[in-house]
Each structure stands twice: as structure tokens, then as C-alpha cells.
Length: 623
Image 1 (cartoon, rainbow, N blue to C red):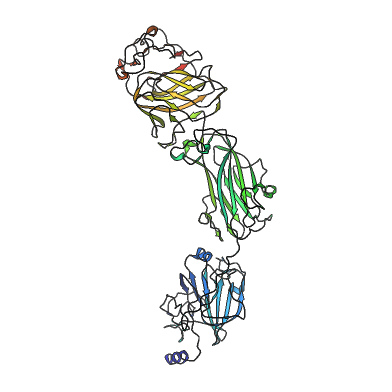
Image 2: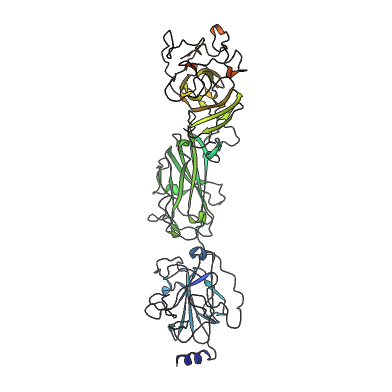
């Protein structure tokens, strides 16, 4: 009897059959509930009380923003439309449209009525009373009304009551589709009688803001370096491409927040901010102040002027910027940009700890984005924000160097802290030993600091930690106004050097000759170069007689600095030449220092054998 009824009704003249009404990459997510959460094929691909067919788009809100069309399932007349409701509902109970949200209703020639529900706001493309053809675009898939994600609710009503358009072992005798397809598959997209006319052009995208961020650094005054652009004066290794500053510099991180969307943000209100900007300033910097600027009305991102957000009572005073916090930026017009200038002072060297970051992000964009409570936090809601895959954050990386302390502890073989060779030796960093290494092949090693432009008033000395395998040598520290010598022991211990009366004014850079003019084959390691306020303490002069190793001191071992003493012979006479220094500096080379009866020819570390070396203002060396 059921089969006979199906054949009788299906052959009635004028019965309307439908095509699948959602276009693109879609999938059936819920069928009509026949009772007890059972679908037409005796499965449970439905939910309790569902009175339609749900067809979801792959890609959720990203696909919704791109636009997925909904078309008429068959010819008919539009009897109702509803638009303007919020279209990114995820809770399943958003108000508007009687639960259908934005929707279209069509009455067909055989009396059936179809509902197309949960459409995207602003996408409804037809009007009441309009005749439509099968396949003609009605709107686009959204998530308005009682919805938990972007999908189309397609509902067929017969005689005013909802009916299941599918037939099957647990369903009714009729299929309302041109071809309903297999279970869990899609019905056909073809209309009765062939393909429909081409759809009209899509509607314009909904008006909404789209915030983009860009960060850049700026420093006060004119800075000098060895390059045309001094924002990156230490270009080796991981510091290459990173903004570089000196301890004591005042700098600004400037973050431009640009609304590239076709709509304005919500307006500012005391109880709910329009746009909230968050930031974190790391250790190594002291906050100084901030300024919020706008390019309105020019909208050119160059005509900056103070913005009224500076007068927002929720923001701190201009000169009292906390280390971390939030700033209200007030509302944005479409196309408007605002610039947040975070001013800070570098207080300590950070390069040894890795590159520091000043982090900034949008924490709240009313109705469209948030809440993002921290740099690494996810975002609960994102309506149309496209920058950085919807994560509105940007950082300003920075390395802080100290003009008075070079420690070569950045953990990168190419991070030379802007030092360079002023001779023929190649430079690198021994990351395990935290030392700048100069390798020479028969020439005198020479190293040069970056331009430091340091007022050295009050600076009286320099402490060096050197390591080399040369015999005890006479090294030199030079600058634009002069140089002083020192005994280069080379065992890794600190060698204090008095800088003398010629040291003064503004020193542009320091030049270091670890072995003086003595040629060398091998490596010299510089562990640290530190300028100190007080002159290094002078050790007491050694008592007469044998030195600490029980051997008589070599001739000329404490000769005046700067004399060509020919290896330390009395009265400037040439001493015995070191066979390792054959062809070295005039005067026969440097005398090896004997330790416990043997010539010292290897690198030594630790406290054993360390000797404090001092060069006083008169240029006299004491050991």
C-alpha cells in the first residue's frame, strides 16, 4: 500500500522537486528528526526536534567571510525576507528572525513552502513578492539566529507543517528532491529541466573594521656607526636586522594601528572601550611616557596629530606609563590610523640574555574581536579581523649593548658585538668560552670596537680578560687621543690597565693590540673589555730577589712601556730572540716568561700564575 501511495503522488502533475540549495564545499550535518533522534535512513544523523535539513560549509567563519551562496531550490515567489541580524552566533540562541535569523521564505507552484535560514547579515538578495527561478541566488550562508556555526537550515513545509524531504526505510513515501543521493551525501545541484540561469553578482561585503598593526623603532638624536643606517649597528649573527641601542639611550617603539576595513569601529563609552591596546615592556628598560596620535582626517599615515584618546580618563597620565598595561584608543573611522608611541630608556645590557621584545596587541575590539588578555592568549571572538591570521599582535625586537662592557656572551658565533678586525685576522666568537676570537697567521692581531662616542669623564681604566699562547707580551690599548701599554699575560685573568692623562673628552672607539706589534700564529681570545670608573688597584712592587717561582726575574722584565727594549735586555739592549718569533718585531722579539723552569707556550686558565698588570699615568708598568 505504501509503495502504491508513493507511485501515485510522485506522478501527480505539477509536483515540485528541489535541487540542493547550498553552493560550494558543503556537507549535510543534520537531517529531519522523525522522532527519537532518528533520520530517514534509520540512523541518528539528526538532533531532537529538528524540523529541517542542515547543510554546513567547510571552513566555518573563514569560508563565511569569503561568501558561500544560497540559491532557490525550485521556481517560486518570495513571501518573506528578514535581514540585519548578528551573523556569527556560536551559542545556538542568538535573537532575531524568530530563531531563523536572517532568512528567506519561498512559496512554490504546488503549495509547498521552503525556508532558507541563518543567512549572513546583509546578504539577502531578493524581496517579498519577487518571482525567482530554481538556482537563483537568495543570499549567503551565515550563522544568525539559533545557530552554533555557519550553515543553511533548509526546511520544507506542506500544508503549513514541516515535512521530511527525504524518503527511505524509516522515512515517508515521498522524496522532494530531483535526486536525493546516497545517505550522508548531497542531493543533486541540478534543477528540473536543466541548469538555472546564472546567479546575480554577490552583494558587497558587510561593513566592518579590519585592524592591522605595524611596529617600528626610533631613537633620539643622531647616532654614529660604521654603516649608513645606525638602527642596526651590530649586524652579525642573530642581532642582524634587530634594532640596536646603547645603555642610557631613550627610544620609542611606534605601533601603527590601521583600520583597513570598510566600516568604523563602535564608539567609545565609559563602560565599554571601543578599542583597547595592550603592551609589555621587558626588563632592561624603564618606561618614560607615551603618546597616542591620529592621521584623521587625512588618512595618510603621515599627518600625525595628538588624538583625543590622550584625554580618556581610563588612560594613565602621559608621563606615568606603567611597565605593562592597557590603553584605550577610542573609536576608529574606516581608513583611519592611530600611532601609539611607547617611550622608554635602556637601563642594562640585554644582548647576553637573547633578543628582548616589547610586545603589543589588541586586547578588545567591541563587537568584533576579543578578549585577548595576554601575548600568548587565544582569541574568543573574531569577526572579520584578517591581520596575522586573526591574532592582532606585533612585537618590537631590540638588543641593548653597553658602551662600557663587552662580554661576547650572546651565544652566537657571529655575534661580535660590532667589533671588527683592524688587521688581517679573522674574527669569530667562541660561544662555549664566551670570548671574541681573532685568528692570525703571522701578523699582529688588532681589534677595534664599534663607534661608542663615549664621554669618558670619570673613567680611569680598562679591565681586559685575554687568553693566548704567545710568550708574555707587551699589549696596547689605543683611542683617538693616544694609547697606553700593558703586560699581556694571556692566561685568561683580568688585566687592569690605567688609561693615563691623555684619556679624556669624547672617545669615539677603542683599539686593542693584545700582543702589541708582535706577529702571531694562532688564536687570541678576548673574554671581556670593561671600562671602569676608578683606576685599577696597583699591586705593591715585588720585593728584591727571586720572583714567585723561585727563579730570578728575566732581564728587563719591567722595562718602561713604549720603549723598544729589544725583548727586555738591560739598557735597551737586545735580549735573546724567541725562536717562535723569528722575523718578528725589531729588537729580537719577546722573551719567554719562565714558569717553574719551563718556557710558557700554552694557554693557561684559572688562578694559577695570574698577575695583575697596571700601567700608570706616566706610562710606567708595574707587575
